[in-house]
Length: 285
Length: 328
Image (cartoon, rainbow over all chains, first blue to last red; front, side, top):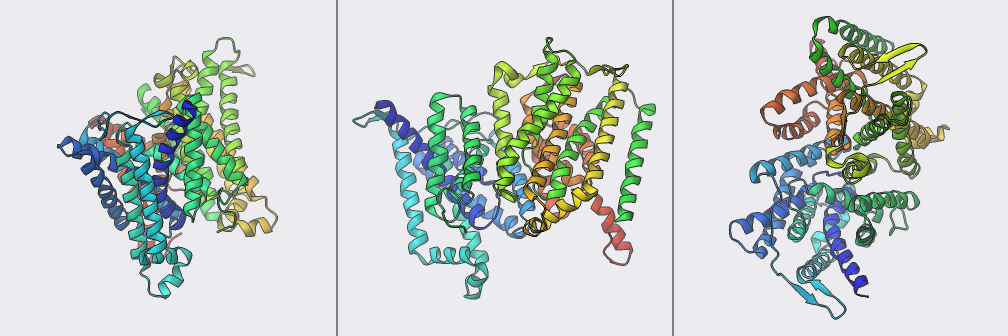
C-alpha cells in the first residue's frame, strides 16, 4: 500500500512538471506549427534563475518568482529575433532554434562555470500522509503545478485574450479578418508558454541536477507528451503527460532510467502508430 | 537537367583526381586526417541522401553511426569470431539498417512526417547515447571500448591490410567515391524522381500508384545502412568507440555539414564535412568550449543568410553577373 502511494505520488510529480513544460510546447508546436528545439532551455533558464537568486542571498520563493520572468524574457527575444521570421519555413525553424539552444547552453556554461549547481528546497523534511511519508516540497510542487494549470484553463476559456488565442488557432486568416492582431497574439502566446516552462524549471530545480544541458531531457519528453496526447486540447496535454510521466515513473522502479526512457520512447512511437491523432483526440484536427 | 548532371560529374571527377594526387604531397599524418574527414563525409552524404531527397530531417542520424561503430567494435574485439573485419562491416550495416527499419516502419506507416519525425529521431539519438553509457557491461560505459584492430581480410586471393596509413586512405577514399556515386545514381534516376514527387505532394504521388511510406522507408533504411558503414570504418581507423559517436552533438554537426555543403548535392556535404572539421580542429585548439557556441551561431547564420549552402554563393554571383537574372 505504502509503496503504491509513493509510486503514485512520484508519478504525479513528474506528470505535473511534464504538463507545465508541455503546455508551452503544445502552444508553439501543436498550435502554431513551430518546432522550437530551444524549449528545453526555458526550463534550464528557469532553474538557473532560482540558483542565481539563491546564490546572491535571495529566498527560494523569490527565485521561483524570477523563473517565469526569465523564461518569458528569453522566449520573447527568441520569438522577436528568430521565430517570427520563419513561420513559413519549418525546417529552418528547427535548425535556427537548435542553434539558439546551443548558444544558450554554452552561454550559461561560460557565465556560471562547469558543474552542477546546488539549489536548496524551501522546506526540508517530510509530511505524514496517513498512508505514507512523503517529502513536503514535492507535495508543494504538485500543488503549484495544478494551480498553474487551472489558471491557464481559466485564462484560455474565460478572458478576452483567451478568446483571441482560440480564434487565431482555429483560423488565422479569419481572425485577421475580424481585426485580431495575429502576430501579436502569437508572440504573447509563445512568451506565455516560455514563462510556464521557466516556472517548471524553477520548480524542479531543487529536485533535479541543475546543468546547462538539463533542458534536452525535458525537451524530448515534452515533445512526446504533445505528440502522444494530440494537439489542441488541455485534455490531450493531460493524457500525454499521464502516459509519458506515469510510464516513466513506474518503469524507473524496476529498471535503469536509460532503459526506462528507451521503453517509453518505443511505447510512444507505437501509440502514435495506433492513434495518429493522439490518445485523447478522437476527431481529426 | 542534363547540364546539371554533367556539372556534377565534372566536380566529382575533379574531387577523385584531387584525392588520387593528394598522397604524393602529403605525409602520413595529413593522410589520416583527410581519411577520417572523408569517413565523416560519407556519413554526411548518407544523411543528405535522405534529407535532401525527401525533405524530412533526421535529427538523430548519429545513432546509426554509433550502432555501426559499436557492432564493428564488438565483432572485431571478439577473438572467437572468424573473419572479424568482414563480418563486422556486414553486421554494422545490417544492424543500423535493422534499427532504421523498425523505427521507420512505425513512423512512416503511422503517417509521421516533417517536424514530428525530426522530434522522434532526436529522442532516438538521446536514448542511443544513454544506452551506450549505461549498458557498460557490453559498451564499456563512458570510456567506451579501445584497442579495436584495423581492418584486415582476404578476398578472392587479395590480401587487404589497413594498418598502414596509405592503404587505409586508399580504401576509405575508394569506398566513399563508390558510395557517393551510387547514391547519386539512385537519387537522380526514377527512384529520386518519385521521392521528389512524394516530397511535393504525397497524396498526389500516392494517387498515381506510388507506395509513399514504403519508398520513404527504403530510402531511410539505405541512408542508415551507409551511416552504419561510416561508423564501422571510423572505429577501425580510430581504434576506439565511445558514446559520443551516437550523441546529439554529432547528429547536429552532420546536419551542419550537409546544410553548409548544400542539401541535395551529395558531394557538397562531403566537402562541407572536410572543411568544417578542419575549422573545428583549429578553433578547438584555442578553446574547446568555443566550438558548440560557434556551431550554434552557424546554424542561425545558415538559416538567415545561406539557406542553400556555400555552393549557392557561386550561383548567386553568377546571377549577379548575368545582369540580375536568376541563375540555375
